[in-house]
Length: 101
Image 1: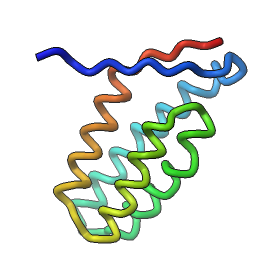
Image 2 (image 1 turned 90 degrees about the vertical axis):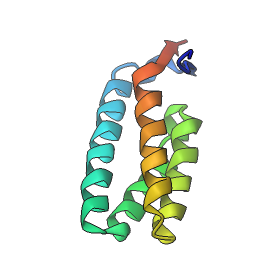
Image 3 (image 1 turned 30 degrees about the vertical axis):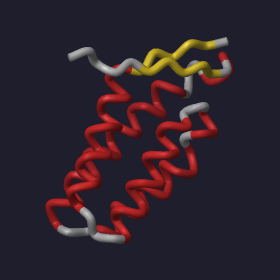
């Protein structure tokens, strides 16, 4: 099966910030995972809300969309969907190609 590959075009002025942004999203995955283990859906909802608010600002609409889905799933206490969205985020972070222009 061929792996998904994402290409995102980003303003070159953000070239030093994008790696930090991605590192923070990986940290979000860890936070969400720990919060799921303890049933802390409010923390997951906050992380999703922050992702929703920040993704598009860096040119990553996919992260904004996932943040919205995570926030909604946390509001519904839907751990299965949250895990799925975490996997999607990890796949995105592992396969995205950022093209600066």
